[in-house]
Image (cartoon, rainbow, N blue to C red):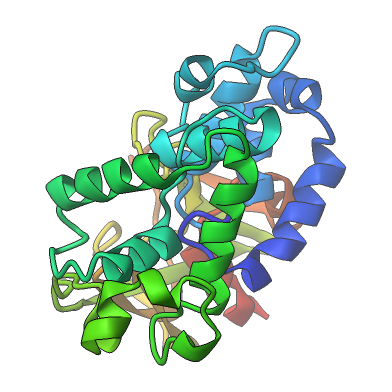
Length: 289
């Protein structure tokens, strides 16, 4: 859950998720729509799908070998190294964003950290520095150093326990590192979501399961989906950002003739709490009254 998401935002989701799925077996036996519904609002839903797959892949016990941990669905080099070293004291260096920053400054290396080649070089550097007998403590210390002392802006070099080894501190370039290519400019996209209702039921459609990002999620129709809808005055609007896309969404009540149209379903508002509903749809429903 902490991947791409701030800890403060994660806490309530984490507590609710554990209440619903207190152990791997509970998660493994749950149906995917229930898992996605519990995750709804956190975004990056592939994380939930992979976590569900990983729980189902476990054969009675969590693996204790790095290679087996790395082979689990959704587990990359960093996660595998962190778990292997902290839980099992296996000698694998865990390199996250904080550690990359520490390493780039220690070496005074201006290489682009977004580059796979640079990340490989820093991984090799971390491997060479790793304490072979205390890999878990070493990895946690490196992460903590980056999170509390070697911070992105205004690093606290005078308090740093490894300052005498830091080439950037000696050269006075610590505020210029690490180097990362600028992100692409955000693209503004206008969308109109329709609140089509019958009493306490709303019109929705479901994304195909094959959709890798939001497969299985329920969505409100857009004006582009129902161009002949009878649209009323907008009742609200909001912004929603995904990566470098900045969506500006207008919410409008509407009436529509569904004759001959397939793929839509009327859903009771109360039932939406147990279904995987997209974040944009949930935000739009705030204006439903």
